[in-house]
Length: 136
Image 1 (cartoon, one colour):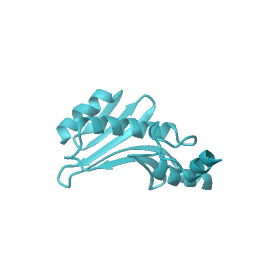
Image 2: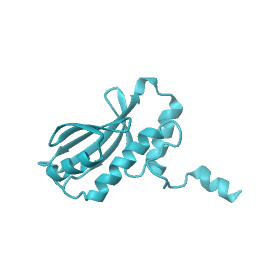
Image 3: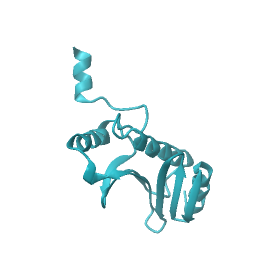
Image 4: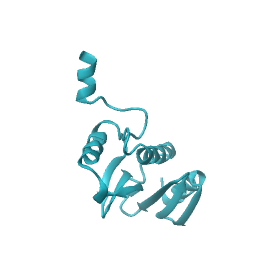
């Protein structure tokens, strides 16, 4: 993967896109995304703001951390500045087209499920409570 290929992929999925190679801002449905890449350092991230973290409850923090282990899969909930984000971070050159497409979908899902299932897809790894419930 390189910035030119990434640019083409993002333009296929985005309803609206602005920016230049290595720094894109785009929208899919009603979700805002940012994609930042650094070819020199072989890094790329697709992120989406969720909400200001000052308004989060302790339960939401707990759910985000638990989701990072069980249901967020290739994305993570993260805080930068005053905002909680859904973030996919990966080496740029090693990315495949399907991984970029999947990353966009997972970030989108993580934003949409924040506050409910906190998940990036239908797949999740069982929690301790899930295992206890199955044994009873």
